[in-house]
Image (cartoon, rainbow, N blue to C red; front, side, top):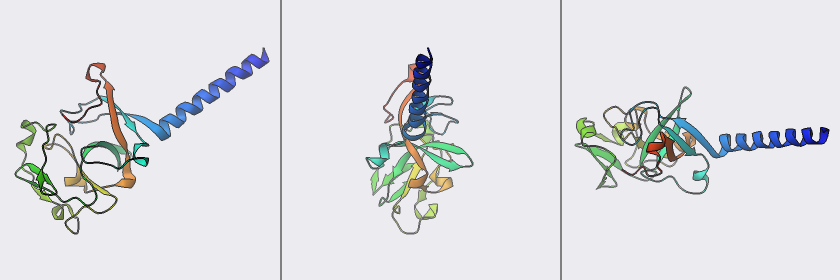
Length: 178
């Protein structure tokens, strides 16, 4: 009887250890708070963030990431510019390295703002994004608190890449390109 109880306790401790490793080092669940990423993500939707993917691959333009915004807040945004890129917005169109982005994830309705910028206007010295820094924008540009307001995001502050939206189940997806 004692052997069986001991085996159950060991199994329970191992299960808890595995859950903690997965939760703190590999994947995390986040709840979308706000409308800055609509129509891609809506308030109270739940996503899974891959916390280790950037140990094996580089952060790329159009990746949807979660990053530490300070004050125990995490933001979800889309990477628009990576180190070495030039980025600017002219007449509501974002240009990366001189090429206009085709941003299917930004509705025409959401283009109702007027917020032109250059890297210089964001406080970047030089005309390229420095190493270890990323320019991020929300898909709902009219209300998003993003690099236009908070500046570039440090690679050290990036928690991980959003891999899937799982709640509500009717919105389950791993594709955030549209």
